[in-house]
Length: 292
Figure 1 (tube, rainbow, N blue to C red):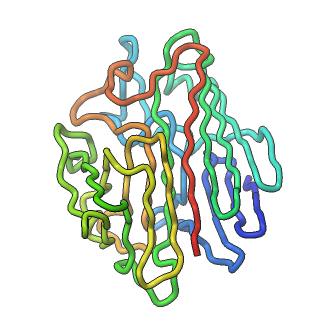
Figure 2 (figure 1 turned 120 degrees about the vertical axis):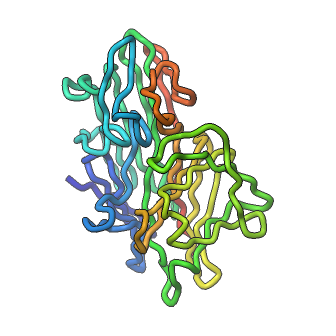
C-alpha cells in the first residue's frame, strides 16, 4: 500500500513495497519523482539493500557456501511493515524471514524513516544485526528525478553541480557493469558541472567516488533546484536507461560498490561493504531538498 506524509509545502507518497518513494509534489502540483514507464524503467525511487548493483553470476560466497541474489538485493521487492506514522513522518520495517535467509544468511532488522522538514525530505536507514555473527551489507538510494522540471527547458539544459573545484573520480566499470581496477577522469565543465546529455549513459551508470557530499540538479533556464545530500555515503551513481532518451535522471547515494569483474565475491572480504558486529546498529541518512 501507499502511505502519504505532507506539510504545507510538500506531499510525499511512499510504498510499503521496498519503501519506494513514489511521489514528491510541491504545493503548485509539480511532481519531482519520475513516475515510471514499463518500456523504459518502471521503478521510481527504490531503496537498495543488502547489496548495491550486480553480483558476478548473481552469486556470492559466505563461509564456504554460495548464495544467489539479483541486482540491488531483495529490499526493493519486499513488503515492509508499518512501525509509526505522523502527518510529517513515516517509519517502515523489514525483518529477516525464511525467504530472505535463502538469499542472505543473516538475522537483521531494517527500518527506514522519512521525515519532512520544510522543503527537505530526510531518509534515514537503521540496520540492526540480530545474528550471532558479523553481518555484511550495502545500502543506498536510487531516486529518479524528472528532467526537465521547469517549463520551456529541455533535458540537455540541466546539469549536476558538484560545487567549486570538485574532482570526483569515476569508478572504472566493465561493459556489463562490474567494477574494474583503477579510476577514470571525469570531465566537468568549469571543474564543477556535469552537463546532462542522454548519450552519457550509453554504457550504463556513471559511478563516482571522492565526491562532495552534496550535489545539485539545476538549470540556468529554470528556477527549481533539487539538492541531494549524503554526508555518510562514499559513492554516487548517476544513471538513466542506456540508449534511451527519457525525461529523468537518477542520482543515487550508495554505501558500497557492485561486484568486481569475474569475481564471485566473498562478502566477508569484499572491499567497501559495511561490517556490523552482532547486536550492533548501523545508521545512515541522506536527503532531498527542493528549492524554488
